[in-house]
Image (tube, rainbow, N blue to C red; front, side, top):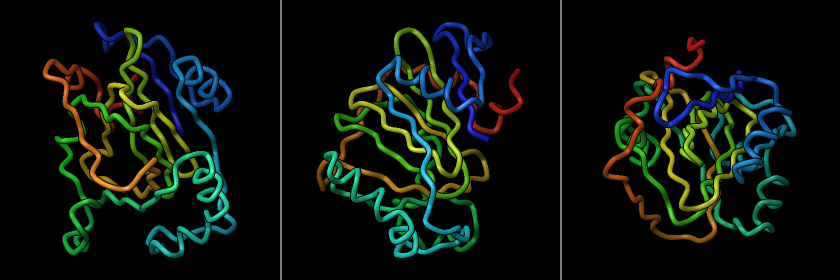
Length: 191
């Protein structure tokens, strides 16, 4: 279930907003300059769909974002399945690396194809924990402090969009606050 939970940066146990209402989520995120939308595939995809099948199913969406300034798209998978060892490293990043607060100079644009992952956005004295599920598109402006978690047993496939090809430096914040906030596996149970 798609979920937004907003907490003060200095009081992670305090929940200011918690909602699964897509309209409320859209409004809350728009208030911090983050784009949220829901997409639908031309047809239902199996969980193990290959890259070509995913690209074909979302071709019109990929082309649309390409025209908006994100011409580079790839498929990322984070999974704990045994067959994952054969995938390239980019598809199975170390959980701890992305759970550390960081930012990128380029926008972070992700569309969840399968599974779920949580993007934690540290903006204006608050942490917006955005639990994205299949069908969710999230576009976060460059230089926004954030972190990501797909849980202890991840099952996440996404289309990643970029403004240009090449290396994308990750800039970690030395005094990041991520460790104080509920992890992916704890978030749905938080009240």
